[in-house]
Each structure stands twice: as structure tokens, then as C-alpha cells.
Image 1: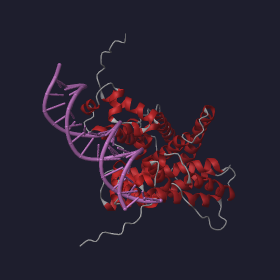
Image 2: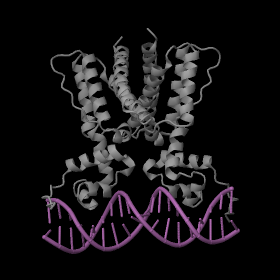
Image 3: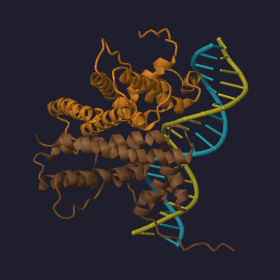
Image 4: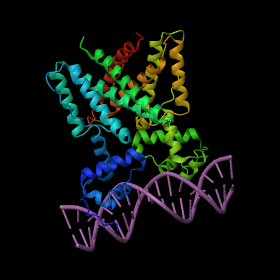
Length: 189
Length: 189
DNA sequence: ACCTGAACACCGTTCAAGT
DNA sequence: ACCTGAACACCGTTCAAGT
């Protein structure tokens, strides 16, 4: 017979993981506190003990999760390589959880996301880019925009898997091409 | 005494206008069928008569509204001018209703939006761009991304109006610069 | 400290009924 | 044809209570 499991204690991390899974598999609109509770084998009200501001805090945390990227620029790279590393990492993080993309592109950065943004600025400056502010904004816009188009396109009918794979490969090639062009455009004149 | 107005008949257009107003002023999460009914001085259930699929149809319509752009390329412009006109028009339409930006960037294009996309492709081809597909995607990504960053930034504290104005002017300059760089990058080699 | 149960105000949607 | 009223299942959140 199925033995009752020793209940794993709830935690902020487990809550966020479960929420990401629901959002990615069923969509943001179906992510409710009650369904989230079910997934965690707990009553919905228990979540408020770990996320005091409730659903608002949950949404913030999800946006932060896919948006607070860390990059280690090994060696002494030139600034375009730093920029490339950041852009690729940010894109990968967003593509991993398309269900919360709307939050990531829309909520103003807070906490860890804001720190990541500051780090990016500093690393670009250290790598020799004089005025990193506009570059950070342009890279951010480019990454957010291309991921948005890429994810949108994957919802464009066409359930054929091989066609889908061809398009994600295409997405990556397009991304690198556009990134090259952008970096040239960002070079101080 | 306040005379009761002759009731203006409900219509799809009035519903969408009211919904845009609520989303822009109070946020998407506060746009409910009941509140929308109140704004239209009607019971919420009356809306279903004009939008049979209910809230889902409403969301689709809002995304379509800010995303189905029409551009008239007067004369015989070169393709970069056509591209510029599209990009500016699309940006303006999105900035007009920041409350539904999340929908616009996230919902797969349908109906009028899809037609607009096709028209854009055709106009670029007619203006001399050999393979407009990648260019349309890149322009779309660029516009969506820069508007997302711009709107996100406007929610970044700083309620000072003159600072805000300075930043929207800055947003426009940044946009034109990036657009120039992108168009150079899109030129057939 | 951590979780539950009951309760409240609010939500989307249906359907029969009114005009 | 167009709108309302009542009803249903579901939602976020509170609070007192359990352990």
C-alpha cells in the first residue's frame, strides 16, 4: 500500500519551483494559490507563511528568478565578449521559463535583478566600455525582444516537432547575428 | 437634478475602449468583467453578448488593438524608410497603452495583427528587400524589446515629472539610434 | 514555528427570464 | 436582439485555532 511520505517542509524555494512548473506547463492564468498548494500537498494558506505578501510576492519572485543572471567573465575579456556572455545567459534564463516571460518583461527589476544589472554595468566598464548605461539598456531590449518573438512564434500553431526544432535552431542563429550587429552599433565612435 | 442619460448601446468597440482605459490606469490585474461592466454602466453579463468567448476574447482583442498597425508608404521609398515607418508606428501604438503591453508581447498574433505582419513583409519586398522574413522578425524584436525596457523604466520609482519627461525623450533618441544600427545590420551583404 | 479550517469578498461564466 | 438576476464553482486573503 502507498505509505504516506514524511512531509518535506515547505520553503520559499520549493514554492517558487512548483509555481514555475505550473506557469510553464499550464500558463500564468492557471497559476493560483490553491492549485499551487495542491502541487505542494499543502493548504493554500500555508504559502502565506513563507511569502507574506501572498500572490504579489510570488509574482515578484518568479520575475526575479528568470531575470537575475550571474556571469563570470574569466580572464580579461574585451567588452564585446562580456556583453555577449551576458546576453546569452539572460536569453537562456528567459527561455527556460516561457510561462513567466510576461512578468519578466513587464515588472520593474527589483532585488537580485537590480544587482545583476549593476554588476553588468560594472563588468562592461571594467572591460573597457566608457559609458555602459546605454549599452546595458540596448542589450536588455535586444534580449527581451528576441526572446519575446521567439516564444510568441512557438505558439503559432504548427505542432510538428521537427519544424519546432528547426525554428529554435533558427532562433539561435538569428540571435547571434543580431547580437553581432548590435555590438558593432554600440562601439564608441 | 441629474437626468438619467439615454443609454448608449453597448458595442465591441466601446467595451475595448473601456477595457484599455482600466488596464492603463489601474493595471491588467484589476481589469475584471465586473469592473468593466461598471465602467460601461451595464451588468457584467451583458458583455458576453458582444464578446462570446468572454474574458479570453477580451484579452485577444486588447492585444490585437495595440498590435495591428497600418502604414502608408507614400511615394516610392527605399526599404529602410519603410522599415523605419513600421518601427515607429508599432512603437507608438504600444506606448499608447502600456497596461496591455504584457499581452501584446506574449500572445501569438492573430487576425488583424497577422495581416499587418503580412503587409509589412510585402511592403518591404516591394521596396527592394530580397528576403523580408528575418528583417520583419528582427524589427519586431527590436520594437518590442525597446518598448518593454522603456515602460519598465518608467515604473522605476522617481515620480518627478521633469525627470520622467527627460527619460521619454531619451527613450526616443535611443530608439532612433538603435534603429539605425539595426537597419545597417539588416542590409543584404 | 508551521500549518489548517472556516469565513469573507470577489471573480468568470451559465442560463433562464425579462423587455 | 439585448440586457438582467440568480446561481455555481472558483479565487485571494484574514484570522483564530490547532500541533
